[in-house]
Length: 177
Image (tube, rainbow, N blue to C red; front, top):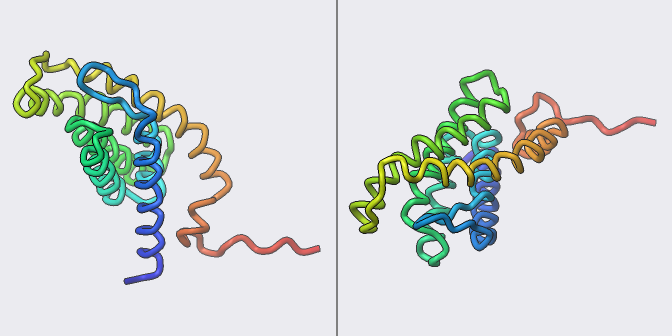
């Protein structure tokens, strides 16, 4: 395994751990537990690690939250769709951060919200309208996206993860006096 892949996997593991530790910081909205930190982590993963890692992180975090009783089945479509669209729009949209933020918002709230309806009705026994989860997921995504817009923009300017992951042609040189 290449050194860069090990670094990406380690960073993904740390971000999943942050998602698990911060899982109690959720906002109950109906049968869903909206977790703004998950959306922040989705954006970190999508921007710095790519769509594949972001989706994998969202899946593992959702799975562990469900196993620990701090999440619901609705965490899967919401977080995974948001992470995927965030990563894809960032990667193929010229690496523009606003596209990543929009991808997380739209992917989680609209796509994830609509995909949550069959899960809620068929698996959870909750009768709801097809678009019942779009607004709560949007509220949750907004919180995480605002956090991400502040922190990820700063991290990107400071090249924090770029240096760690080796995404630069040359690492910053030491200041010479």
